Image 1: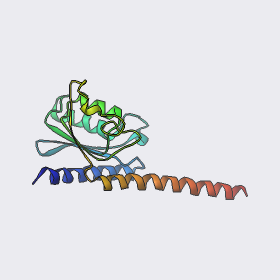
Image 2: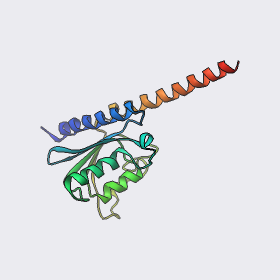
Image 3: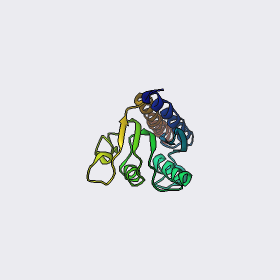
Image 4: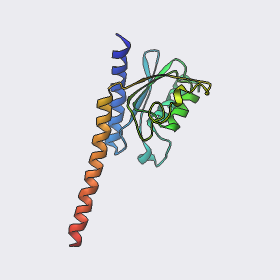
Length: 167
């Protein structure tokens, strides 16, 4: 099996994690970490559930992978994530020495791998990552678009109901 197909298989597992987040009312972002052709960590966003700003999918997966391997160095791993990592997550990726990152959709408002900054490929840091972008990008992006569309529609309905109650 070639790298392209392997990346798609693992990204589908990250999408499964994103769907778990969505079922909880969380922003649907999922991440997995693969080591030696096996998944050693899976996670999804839990910020709303935990009311903790750092419970992003990537950070939770990194913590679980470190426990699984028994080291803070996640060398020889690949991180798959449905959305381009933010600055906090990009920093954690660098600090944990993950050598390869594969992501689905770009994040033009917060992405720090390709969109706003290129933190994972900045030679001023003591670690750089191989980055593969756009794996199942359309599917990853549509999950997020549909999630936020539903939130906007719900807010619009609620506002309309309030106005009707006042009248």
